[in-house]
Length: 345
Image (cartoon, rainbow, N blue to C red; front, top):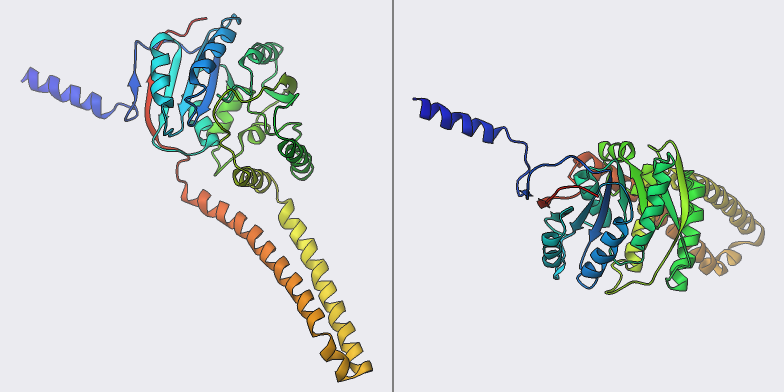
């Protein structure tokens, strides 16, 4: 009888476990570190080894305890295999594996959710964000800042991308009221309070650097170096960059809808004025004049129709975001979390 009760107690304990499916825990549980490094990776097999070497060398220069969280965002190359190899020789490294590719910002959200540190620093794995700049972000945290942004200096990007980034930074700052000099820099630091605010308010296709400003009380931006991509190719095409900027604009401002209202009002007034003008000319010059202006009217009509399609597309973007938010689908699906320890400097 006691044996049956013991088995039932074990089954009840297993049923009430909150451990996520697919989670792999390596080693005994350990207290959280002071600093967490979160890095999303997608098809970065050319950079994994060099990135880990430079990252852990840079972390060896700080006095705080730390952990490194690498998020494999459904890579189709050897990225995950190489991460598992690195984890064998690095005792403070966690590998978060997503079920498929969900995008960079969803991968960062997964990394933030898995992080334990009081300070969380994000950076890309392509080494355009030099890991050697991390101690400067840590120093900003020591000075009492809860959000540390970075401004890329000496950017190693094509001229078009630098120009587009500069234009976007100014546009978004003006229409959203969010004061960031460099929205595109991935190398950023967040306090635990800011991270908890981000995780507690998930949004559809959110832009994390902009969202974090709502929860920060003392933020700062510091200049950092920018290097050429170490290997592989950029995962951001022009289409993805445009989509990212559209998410940023529509996710943090109603200005485009308000602008459409004013544009629509102006076009309505222009259309009424044009109708009155055509009517007066028709009465003054007769029916012969009206026939000769057919193509001009078509041209004006095409302009109005094009503007209407633009307006409908923008309104559709907002409606689509509302639809996605109402469905409340998760931004990512975990496949497994591989942890090891201890978390010591």
